[in-house]
Image 1 (cartoon, rainbow, N blue to C red):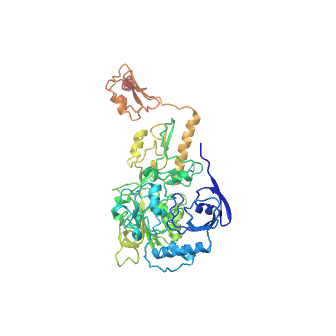
Image 2: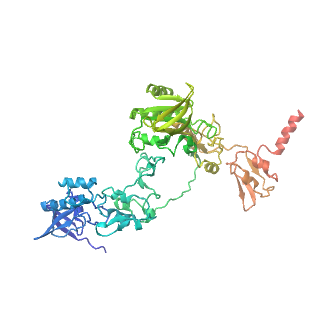
Image 3: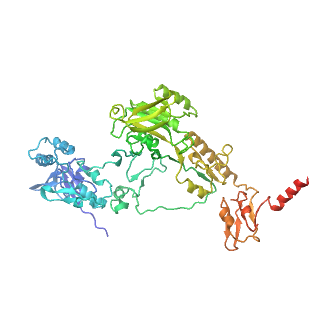
Length: 589
């Protein structure tokens, strides 16, 4: 039987309150809308009262004393006063001591100024940490990593790591930095280092997030690789605050088998990694980005709010956009990626619209083939974007005499004026090639597909049947079949969906008459045909020790017929007797 919670009645600044006995005064005051300043409190950490800024006056009968609101429990019949002159004087003294310890910390200066304290009578120590211990308690109580703790005694007491040696206990969760009231603990992203590629993300970067803003169903998911609970077994704050109790950390992924009659493959593509072309400086020079990173930067929900910014937070003076990085190149991909020219022109338009930067386009051939594309190209020319025809040789750091014009230097040929040029810019955008997805080979084997020499999935016919494959019931759409833009992808996917629906409406499927069959009387059970069949249409019957053909999967290619050493495999309507009869008929004429 659960023990009933004991309720008490007390007053806070004259307001009568009923609450569970032991509830901190700070929490009750917050519910009444009464603000009590504090620097060391966190809702999910056991209150410590170390900063003493939350001091209030407690009265019970003739007795009164100063207590810290964050950890003083509610008691029956008490009266709490949060803003008397005595309370304010006490807070001024505490803030004066904190100002002496951390005179340059903004949060301490602002809070002290709110109580009229601008100078301190005590010796200034010029430290950043107020020794509130909030970071230590979060790391130990919530995260469960125990990576930081207290060191020293008295005035030398400080937050430190064990023995001042980097510890493997730290999981880099950033919880300590998130709760630090003075900003002493900071997390700096690795991309701030010289030459590191900046990381761009859309939306929140926490362990609990909604995959996309258009996600269906639009519900949050937990990333096990980033979640503190899956690293240390601690935290579970999300579970505590979730009102419908919808979070279950013990839930596991399930693999479900679903029987289907048709499959549409839209596995997409990967971007060419510009690191394979070191002459362009991607990954070694600052402010050299690929197209997807710039797409994230220009997105209004992106990390810069849609502004075009350098790593140092400033706007670039000039931006160079290099076309065909990895495409139309015999050393990498000889094909055209089709989309690069138009999104490069889009980048130029947006950069011109949102900044004062000069924009340079370096192209081989401008391929604006779609509806309205040529008109958009003309519009870009009217916006005074510099269009240079020629392949870029390299991107290097600008010399001391050219830094005032740009931090980077693009060396290229201009085939229209037949000159070698060096263009100083602050930012370089690489229009990387589209290439087959990394798992294309695995998908090919799984679904018995063919691939063209460029690595993309091969369609049944490039003009008459661009969505179907050689395997019935398997359709392809989008960039898994080859590079294409959004309108072409939508058109192809709609075509494939229509084909699938048409087959469903028929209710039955026609099977070609020309298929293979195996005579069980002649089959020796060698299983050679099982291994050779490209459509996995032959299965071995372990009971009768013979192979059998699944006529639904068989395409009548004749591979098994040609390879069968015992002559048990035959092609329907193309048996040896029929072929010999046809030959005799031709010769007799």
